[in-house]
Amino acid sequence: MDTRSLDSAAPGAFAAASPPADAEYAAWAAARRKRLWRRRVLPATGIVGLVLLWWAVIAVFGIKPFIAPTPWAVIETLYAKRAVLLDNLLPTAFEAAGGFVLGNLAAILVATVFVHNRTLQDIFFPVVLMFNAVPLVAKAPVLVLIMGNGVEPKITIAALVCFFPTLVNMVRGLESVNPQAMELMRVLSASKTEIFFRLRLLNALPYLFSALRIAASMCVIGAVVGEWVGSTVGIGAMILQATFNFDSPLLYAAIVMSASLSGLFFLLVTLAERWVIRWQPEAAH
Image (cartoon, rainbow, N blue to C red; front, side):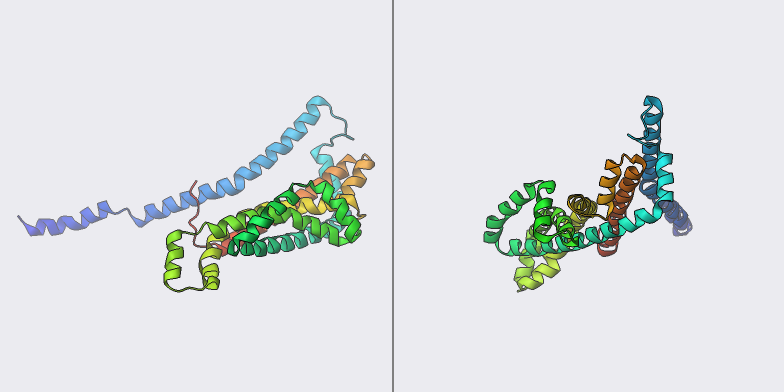
């Protein structure tokens, strides 16, 4: 056999066997465009479709403006009363953010205690479950009576809303550690502190951020409910005032502001998750 023919044919064979770099880049670019399409274009399409459906229902059924205003009337109200809306949004944002931080920190600490002491978990977890089963509108007046009409009950209500989902997810994340990894840490004579920070906590981070995304939306609801019970400022108070005055454009504008605040918190948590959890491969769609 002539080896020179093999040598001359080898480069072409290898070039045909391995894809060129341009093809790999094209595939990566196509996948990136698809991800951007799913993350940005499709959600925007859903929002626009919802607004158009809202407009169509009002036009087709002839709904009165004091019941449901048109989207354009809400946009005009958002612009005309932007100063008042922003002034009332700031207290709600402060109460929601404070409740988000306090509630989630408390949930992480309690989950850590539960994981290291099963007896305490068996005793107090049903108590936490029963307390969470009490409706939020029933807990809010009690907290207002105890703490007064300041920001304290609003922050506490927002914290309680965030506490239970984070507690459940954090306990599950701390407990669902790979048994082989746990055994390896014990073989290496790792302390409980080292096992917690090097194994349990890292394993629990995806569970934690799943709960934080829920809490990011729920904390605004908690703050608004607290403002319903006893407050003269805030988005919750503005919603009540607009309802009593039959000012539906202002009512819907306040709802849009609260929903936008929830969306902002959700976006911040999502960005923080991408920055913290870098070892997880991006989900393919």
